[in-house]
Length: 140
Image (cartoon, rainbow, N blue to C red; front, side, top):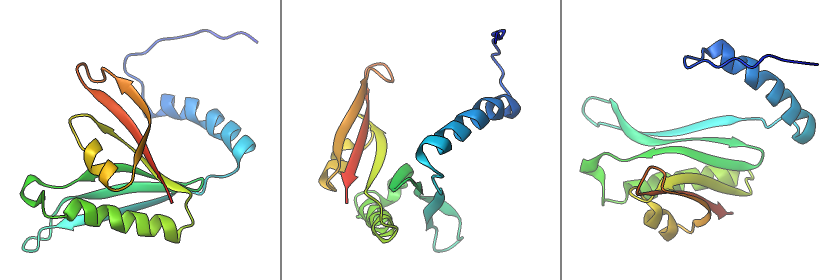
């Protein structure tokens, strides 16, 4: 079999799906269906009800991945981030997860995650330039 390789600097969702579909099929054939469950805890303004931050993640293949954690500046230092992480950990335990993983930058919150029992399992130095991206996990 031969194939032409074509570059595009403006890929579409259809391009992404064309690449993802066979990859997903192969992964499922090797590791089984991941049964992805999306979870979120929202921080809401008590007056207007608008979401102003929170935690967003996914549970799949026996692990929880925390994709996003955002606490507004006005709420920082009050234990809100810790409370969100406690909620996520309780959900992960309830779902029978082996652990939780996430990534964070050196200018974000690696020290915060360490206080919660997370350890670094990988890092990407100089990404972005002058900083480090950390990949962290906590076994449950």
